[in-house]
Length: 109
Image 1: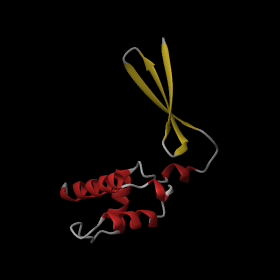
Image 2: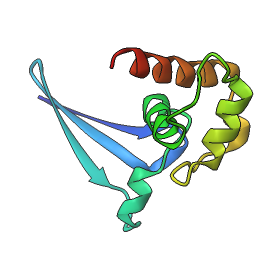
Image 3: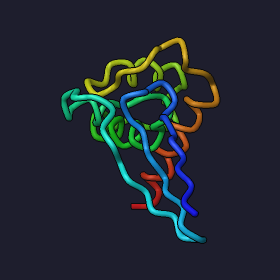
Image 4: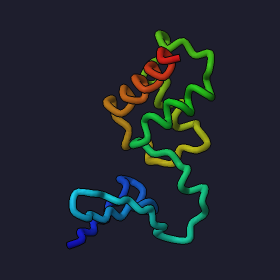
């Protein structure tokens, strides 16, 4: 018996995954939804907190995180060239997650 599950990324119907279950083994396949340019796959959304943190770290390498506010993270994220999501979907939880990812990336080095 095979089970097919289609999972769409929140806020990005251009990306989907088909997960095929065989016994207890899961195999994941990426399938294009449309003929959109490959660059669309690299667009960041609010769901991509770790990728946003890395992009912010590259863009603002000298930022002192003790002085960075959630408002600054919001503004800086919207300014990223690769960011393509609705600004109104941001909330404190998402911004704090980006901050945590950025902080953990810095202290892990």
